[in-house]
Amino acid sequence: QVQLVESGGGSVQSGGSLRLSCAASGFTYSDYYMGWFRQVPGKEREGMAVVHPSGDTIYSESVKDRFIISRDNAERKVYLQMSSLKPEDTAMYYCAAEERGFFGIGYYLRHPRTFDFVGQGTQVTVSS
Image (cartoon, rainbow, N blue to C red; front, side, top):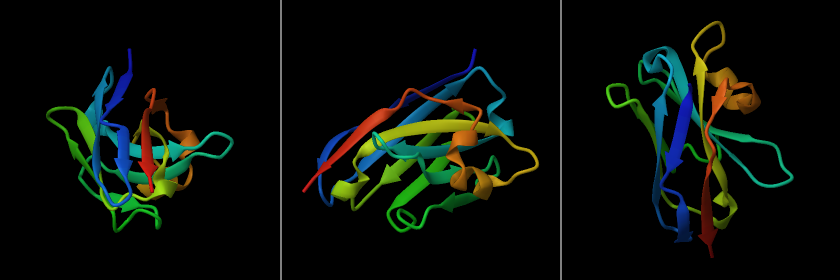
């Protein structure tokens, strides 16, 4: 049974930092791309970052100088370190997984709806 469990969300003031974590189980973690996307009610999912099993990463333009994605293959965890947070970063943040294959990590960054597995989400609220 696949499980992705996020933690680390919360409320922070503008300019602050948060670190999201995602614990994965139920699949061969080292064969999967891991990513983070966010969603605001009434809007489409927005891909934030994706990390390849090798450690290669890709980011959306809106976060690439502020967020860092990393993974620990031994612990089966993926992280999103978020800095210089802005009110527009307020959203539900989701961890997601996709078995590596024909498409690279860039595809899943641009198409977060296509991830095979998605966690339940963790809320991030940034106040001005």
